[in-house]
Image 1: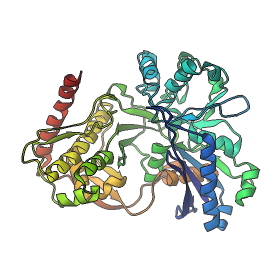
Image 2: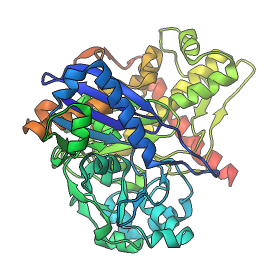
Image 3: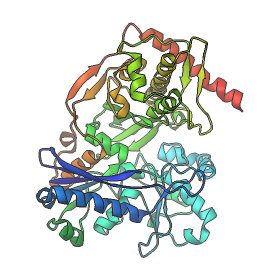
Image 4: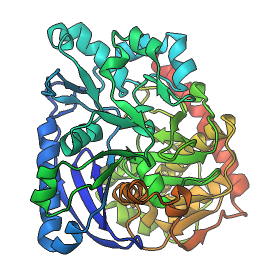
Length: 484
């Protein structure tokens, strides 16, 4: 048996998987986020331990024999969080999370230093780890002086599980301290933020052994000695391992609260100017790129609240047949945008409203706007040297067939729907645990699920969608210019 642990922002999910990659069971423990000031987002690492204990207790109650048979554990986690420890591994302050924006000034200052983009291959976003440490240095200097270790959230769980200070490449690529091409810490970038490599965990690949479960925990959970803990992955890379998105040209589009277009790469292909994330993948000698939009299903949920209808009802109201884009265009920048604009200040808009603009028309515009935002990410990936021939859809928004038809036509790519199953980050983490414990081939282990259905682009509407997309592209500079 193999155990995947996924530390998210709202909870910890624990999943048991057998040798045949059949899911035996799963359980979870809930987490809350503290927001003591506007723009702040924090969690107490002790709550991560509590939620993990809760999830594993649930598995033990339901599947004691399977839990006892675990031989490998894989970790997945929310990225970018700054978990600060002293020389005795005591937590110095609540972890500053990925969606905390307090260090936006520090991030801009670091990004203005050309070595950061040159070495990391990425813009220094406010959510990344390095600017958070600069903020701590400038605002909590006494605490900063005590920092012996900086760990990412899942790697704090690893410390609790194994006693080891270890991280891996995919998660560490989101710190703004990693030389992403060479897969090692950059001493010059650390120095630029007042840090040094001594404060960083050791680095391994996501498929490598990265410690063993402490005997105290193994005994409590009914496991034997020598349970291997894998390097693991950041949450998106772990999801890619679960989806089998590990080979050159494989990609998925995630329609969750935010949207992600994720592409696996056999080589390092940075393009920070387009706000594409270029990170190490969880498998050795592989990388990945991500285009990230901040409001995907969040945009439809926002409109749902205004329209007084559920998102599902709004989608149903559109019908099954894809419509020609109308005169109304929606920019889904409700909380700013990452790819391709890197603009935290821009906000969304409807353009082209008229007396004839009904609820159905606006629903269609919202879905098209998100589809065009994902097309922006596709164009950014193409500019970085990545060619895609198809994508797999995951996330809550993929339940809307109309939306999938819109995305397929906007991208002019077929969109595959996987067969029923849970192929997310916890499953990907369990796969990494299997590889680390058994030495199994990573690519063969991380195979894609069967395809249940393929949504093809509507060839009769591709030209109309292209025209509407170009109109969409012209609106961002016009609105940005009007707002400044």
